[in-house]
Image 1 (cartoon, rainbow, N blue to C red):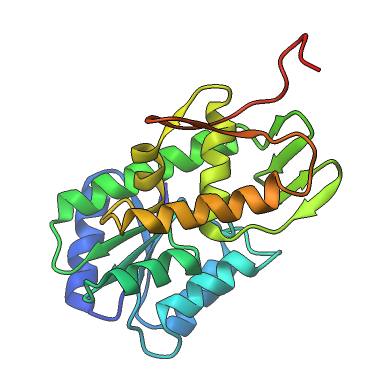
Image 2: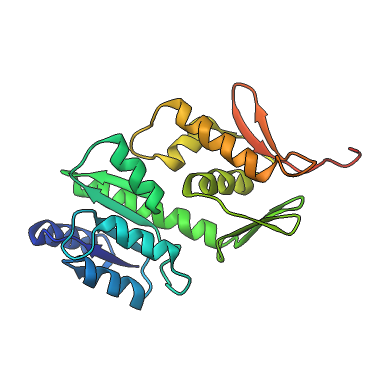
Length: 232
């Protein structure tokens, strides 16, 4: 497994790389945004560790460009962002840019390795199921496409994560706590933020169609189910 480390603090980067390599990873390294983006566009990685404050191009912009690229082999590669800024607004901005996890400096190296392993494991599980389907709703994970009844649906990062979790678990229930941890693994926001994302997802996936698929299981969470046999 090869990890790209993009961090302009060379002492910190050296410590991270040494610890990662001691735990079985190979590492490639960039100390500025331009080189980091160049490497991300030139070869595939198992994960990317990306500092936000970088010379040249900042980490947010790099993350957005990787996620928006249709040719990058790292479009779906897990990205762990590093930052010294510990505010909820900054974290939400990072997740909106396409980051999968967020680690605030200073951090313990064992936690860094643990998070990278979890991200890679989660991504490998997703990649084994490239298309998820319930009724007339389909999600192509490899192509980053969602369609219902043949119509394309554009989702933001949070709505995509919620829908993916529901489709992977279908017809089982996904608790609100599980959804929150998927979207905000480091620090939970106000509960109204999740409600807002769920509302938006329903508006896109269910409202334009006759048969709603997303079901609220009161006091537990959400599930996505097609019509059962015998239902009209």
